[in-house]
Image (tube, rainbow, N blue to C red; front, top):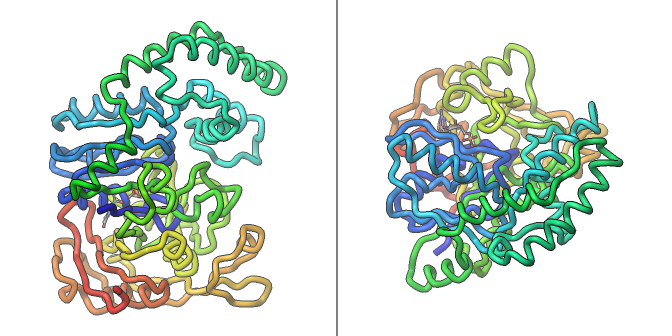
Length: 430
Ligand code: GDP
């Protein structure tokens, strides 16, 4: 069976921890979209790791880690990550890379930087990992598929042709150095030698695994609000962040996805530009940022301080609905233990009217948060294993949010480690 682990919000909800935890009882973990532009932080017996491309199951010997066709594959970063975990004592992970995945080229990263420079103050706050130029080229049909590395005539012709196209923009729009086809071809030969042992037909591998009754986890990157169709366009990422896209980005039938675990953090954080209705500022935000996550809310890829806010029921209800949530994993609840009172955003006021429906971007920009304040629990809940043992105010917080979002919270995470999880029965479970 297939389970998807996806985000309800802007990303950084703790998907890496939940995937790593669920991987104990799975066989295969697949990345199906996105690239090295966001990170997952995982804490386990080997230490603390920030992964950007490697699936979060890579720490188990029984797991096969798969890069699906939907991913923006940055080969040097993937291999750097594999080397890094091996150097730190993790057994070499079993890896499979889709022959249909496309590669982030060195010029995609340059174009990302040049475009942000060109846009100046109007930039998207890109992580400059080449993701938008990569997906633009994929859909403009001028991307490079991993399979093409193994046909040298095709590769040479294509490198010449693409460099011709790119050099026009480099010369006339960005006024930057031109690409040298011979150098690019050399780089691609290096990529070919690196990936060769791992390349395969992922779709066929996964379909066979399903026939054998294996458990597959689809690991999403970012969250619903960064989806190019359903998110806060244009402040979104360039590939779909929804569980439904897992079927496409991995090459499996959509009806095989039986469980959709949507990860929601007990407060909000976001990176990059864009409307963020429940955002907080000043000392209140600094304190939550300092205490947040595991060692502070700073980007796993960029180290940038994350924008902070209270839990947003409007965005999360929408985020869970678009994912097709069967289970909510409610994470980082332990961090809120210092607060006397915890505000929660229960509605948006737009042009004098209150709504609980998440609006399109130009209306979102006008939205003001409607806040309800709940009492805090003022203690450390780490180490608690049973839901009933959580302080009453803490349970009330969980249950209030569950009622507002309308999806069952069946897991509560109270620490960064694999074992910091509380399972709970929900009245909303079907
Ligand atoms: P992802 O991209 O969705 O995997 O999220 P990140 O890894 O960027 O951010 C989640 C952060 O919170 C990481 O530093 C995790 O180690 C940490 N984390 C995850 N779950 C919990 C939790 O329940 N409690 C605490 N304190 N930290 C958590």
